[in-house]
Image (tube, rainbow, N blue to C red):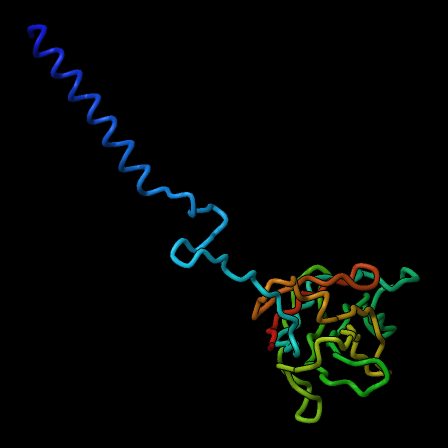
Length: 194
């Protein structure tokens, strides 16, 4: 390659670099912003508005853990006529403080303290139902009950409140683990309405 060809090649490369800078510069005006300004209207989009739900709907209550023994160390459901201790026959009750239960579930016989039990069915047609709707600001309690022949025994409780279920993210559904008294743990699944 001779000197003249080398000079022409350098000029051509310089022109290519200048053209590339001009193309990039035309695409980036001073109005563009990484913060989301609309270049055509020079407007910033409105901020996301976090709504507060009006209603909480509980679709399912799952008990994932409860205490293996009573608070005094005794076994649940001890039976003097059997050869050994029995496990509790559990059910859940959803209740607003001072009111009759909104929902009483069917029963799981001889439940293991460290297994999961899903509750969606009522004990009878008179025991409420899931899904159950309530106001976002209202608190309910979920009681775990040992369904005994001689009388039911409340084993544990956990509070369910809309503000504890809601992550301030405009979500329409939720699945939330709630910790209650002693080793009691439930998972509540449901929805929000705005």
